[in-house]
Length: 64
Image 1: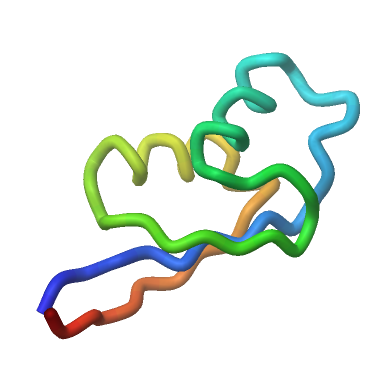
Image 2: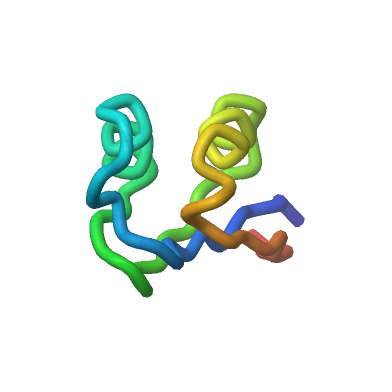
């Protein structure tokens, strides 16, 4: 089983710094209530940490 992260954008990126907007885009999000599933890697965790006030996430187990 591999760990994945279900990431949901909860707030808009309007009036946010450009780096936060680019991080949201790199995560595959774009508007509030968009959800994406990514592998649990240190790079993705770092991105989530940078925009933690704009997103929520949960760990999910995926059997492959």
